[in-house]
Amino acid sequence: MARILLHICCAPCTIYPLSILRHGEFAVHGFFYNPHIQPYTEFRKRLDVLISYAATESLPLIVRKDYDPETFFRQVAFRETNRCMYCYSLRLNAAASLAKKSRFDAFTTTLLYSKLQKHELIVSLAEEASRRFGIPFHYSDFREGWREGQEAAKSLGMYRQQYCGCVYSEMERYCPKSFDGREEDSDTAGACERGLG
Image (tube, rainbow, N blue to C red):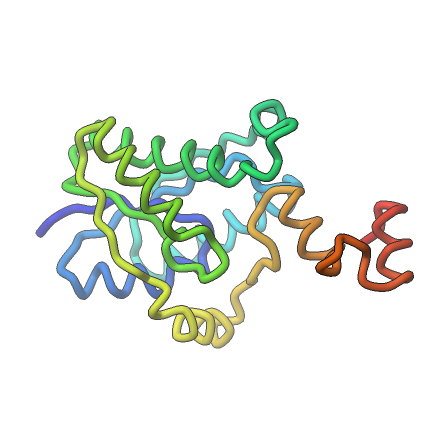
């Protein structure tokens, strides 16, 4: 049976990909490496939920507890609109490197599950990491199981975060802008300006 390293962003996004990979005759090992989730309490919450879920699913889990928002901010300063490329690339390169070093047959990522992620960019960066480290990237469009995975997470009472991970995605989620760039209403605008939104 082929061994695959599954880079994991969070537990809810793991449910469907894990099922598909196991039905595809892979022996799956999880790999949590997400050093830019902010704030730290959110990072810990996502990690703790994943550890609990992995135990119930007998999913071997490799955890890197690196927490390094300072490097993230330095890398994306004045390039905030391209921050996802840096964040995806860092995590996918780490997964490919670990997969090669640990003699896995391939690697993949739960980032391919979310309908809210930049799917084509993730695929491109994963393929680049595959070439760089000489390890196959297993592509599957896990978005097909989006609803199934979300319903399973709800039925398990699993914590489901409301933003991708970095402070910029949190701001986009909770301080939405209208299409012309203005805040949507005065209450939200005031909260955002005071840092409360």
